[in-house]
Image 1 (spheres, rainbow, N blue to C red):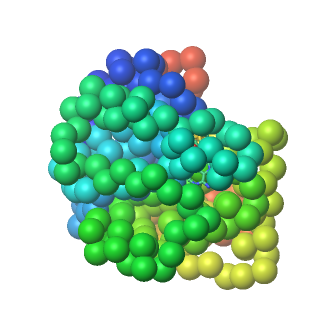
Image 2: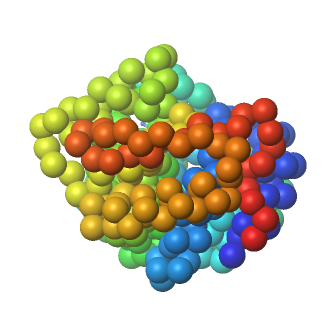
Image 3: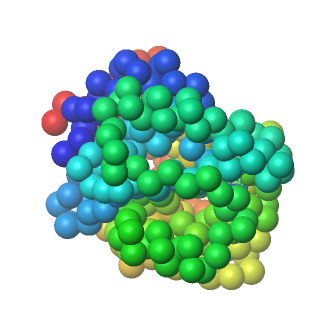
Length: 255
Ligand SMILES: C[S@@+](CC[C@H](N)C(=O)[O-])C[C@H]1O[C@@H](n2cnc3c(N)ncnc32)[C@H](O)[C@@H]1O
């Protein structure tokens, strides 16, 4: 269980790491992690678009002990960052990882354009990491990249896992919403939306989405009574909207 380490990170180093992430996200991640533990869903975490590691380190600490986690970014190949949303920096990322206590072999770092990843490379990642328990899509925000990166996430994340899509409702990055709309209105993906909070859409494998949502509704209400929950439908699927108490610093609940 990595939640004590996550709590320390969110109250401390998190605020020194550059990037874009709202720590109240753990109002959802903690109960989902507990559901995964109770249901035998293990595995490392992955992210496309790690930047300096703000969200990645929190996810990897949540799953501390699983290895290797996957960190993928174009880093210095910024010619492939077509919308210029944050310039990844490998040195800063590695320094932040080390400060968070990650050692050799715990994180597989790949310098790559997600649009150019081949089937063979994806198979290699799966053989190395196994299926991911949590995967974050936060690279380039164009519709094409969102669709491509979400498909990679669906491919590499194990059923019972969670896929996070950043900036889904951010008015400055409409490509993210457009990409997912194209995907859900023209296709019928196996991964479906089931929660939204703090700038991220959460998707689950359709076979597990109902159970995960039922757990979230009960667990979040018990663990974070200061948060507000509203149920909506997205693309025909039940989805929990969570508004955390942003004035407070209750990112995780005591175990
Ligand atoms: C908004 S930042 C990510 C923020 C980060 N997740 C955090 O927690 O702060 C976007 C990142 O995506 C990377 N990126 C952009 N285009 C990419 C691509 N085609 N393939 C892989 N990474 C890409 C950028 O270099 C940048 O580091």
